Image 1: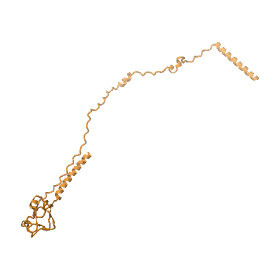
Image 2: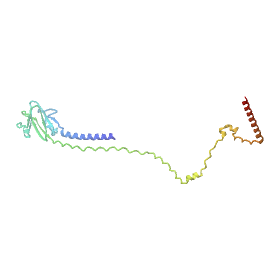
Image 3: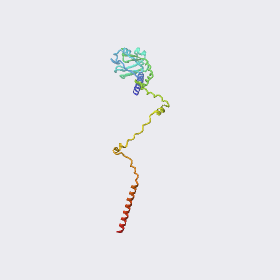
Image 4: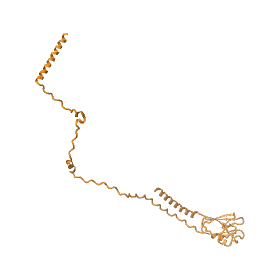
Length: 242
């Protein structure tokens, strides 16, 4: 999933950044120690040996001396420190605020040059310890593998059975069935009476055949035609006479 991969990448980046920051802190972090704090300062009223033993000084740390015009700061050698000698100071400052950078491991010695101040305990010995080597950044954590999509859950129901195949038919089965099938029924024809109701009362029949005429009837018919012809002739002459 994209969101899970993005979160894993963010976590890996945060881990790398944290390791890098810790390594840089060991290299560049430095502490500024105000001499005599928090109960005092550079004024001769502090047990500087006890104050220094409670601290861990590392290269890069600084010492800040704060004092009034009655005091000053001298950095001296180990021999002059023991003798409280101000004859050959390595550094001398009377500005009121003196900052000394501890640049390398080893011991450093400081005294106040005021008359009798060193003899009264106004002196400081610090031992600068070796700064631990910065830890190399560990290899970045491996990104978790991308989550695999869940496999599809098989269906619990059994699949529907396939339809049973029809048994094969013999080659002559169809012809045998056709050979023994009954002939189709002849179409029925409705009688004419179904469409002509009057036929039930007076059924249609063919015209009667003409009966042969007798010899007497034929003679009479010829006579009638003769009389008609004579009448027409007489009528014709009458019309002409007019």
